[in-house]
Amino acid sequence: MTQADRPTSAGVFVRYEDQSFECNPGETVLDCLERHGVPAAASCRTGVCQTCMLRALDGAPPALAQVGLKDTWREQGLFLACKCVPTESMTIGHPEAAGLSVGATLVAKEQLGERAIRLRLRPEGSFVYRAGQFVHLVRPDGLSRPYSLASVPNVDDELEVHVGIRPNGAMSTWVRDVLGVGDRVTLRGPSGECFYATEDAAQPLLLVGIGVGLGSMLALARDALEREHRGPIHVVHAAARGADLDPSNSLRSLANHAHQITPHWIALDAQGDRRFTEGHVGPYAQRLAATLTGARAYLCGDGDQVHALKRQLFLAGIPLQAIHADAFVGAPRPQS
Amino acid sequence: MNQSLFDQIGGSKAVDAAVDVFYRKVLSDPRIADFFDGVDMDVQAAKQKSFLTMVFGGPNRYSGKDMRDGHAHLVQRGLSDVHFDAVVEHLGATLQELGVQADLIAQVAAIAESTRSDVLGR
Image 1 (cartoon, each protein chain N blue to C red):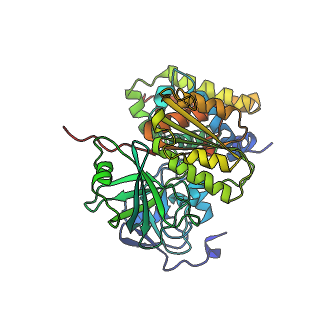
Image 2 (cartoon, rainbow over the protein chains, first blue to last red):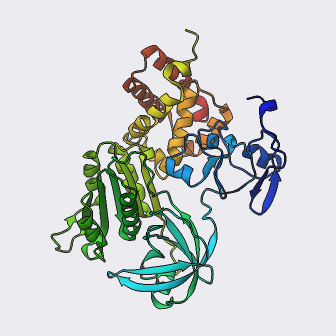
Image 3 (cartoon, rainbow over the protein chains, first blue to last red):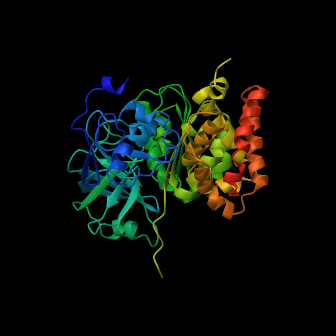
């Protein structure tokens, strides 16, 4: 298509960080930002290196701007600025931009095993998410931390979040000691690429939840079943100690109800519980992956462990585009 | 045959097929694996795709300066000929595994070789 054949896009604006920039017809988002003196990272400028990746916050970006991106990334609106020629105005943000904020009321709070708390929240407005994603919980003073969403949209009425209690955790101790039913918090998000995205209903799925990451994986598994996934679904819960495995027996009940789901429990220290495997999740997951031809893997939990596991599963043969990892980075340690 | 090198190798589909194979070889090689540590794997894979696109003779806009700037921090950490050679070795092995003809592999190796001084900051 030549310049003359393109539909006129007069009046097309790119909204970025509270400013609006008018795009020239046929101009890419990258060109537009640079022309307005907005700092925008870029490198190859041919749609390959992903340095210029940004996120569309309202509506889907042009398909051409998403070529080469992983499926769950496309669904989250990630796109390449150097390849994006907008045909209508768009609002954009950084890839890590957690999205919009919405207020929510706490409707239930209960202990989950020894080291976690289950919260049920009712958002004040629309909160659209995919099962398996996570959300930032924001305290009234602005402190925010990410937590897995354990609920499934269209199945569960409220949002469910599992908060792992850290001994000196600013947010988790506040949740445990201060936050009460009826209180209001702010939610920002959703974020994350761990959600059901396969077009192959027979594909083996390997879901690994590390610590409180299990919540996301159970939600994803339930969502997969809702969407009539036919292939085997392996859900692995990994934790440091046996006492932290499957604290509310959710994995066990899910597996009992759905024969497609094979549960696995692994702890560094099984604490004598013979139901659990003792060992490191890495080699265990690798051996499991080797038995699942053409599998897609989802990993959720503590940052370092998730990164290590992603590498191990990739080396075990799962394509990188078929590994979806949401790694929670621990809160900064307090200065003392 | 008037097809470009990139087309003969298989274009962007060949790059897609090559990236996981190549990246696994690099991560499994103790001589160079450390240089790829600590970088998000998806980010790294995208850079590998750019690199492969370039050495397969594909479209790219990298200049000698880009190669120099991009690798300067690694050169500071000790990146040298030994590491460069290891990468070229894995590049060749990857293409062999994908069934690319020897004369095309030689052309790719030549393109990679032409970046040595820039990559190593000489």
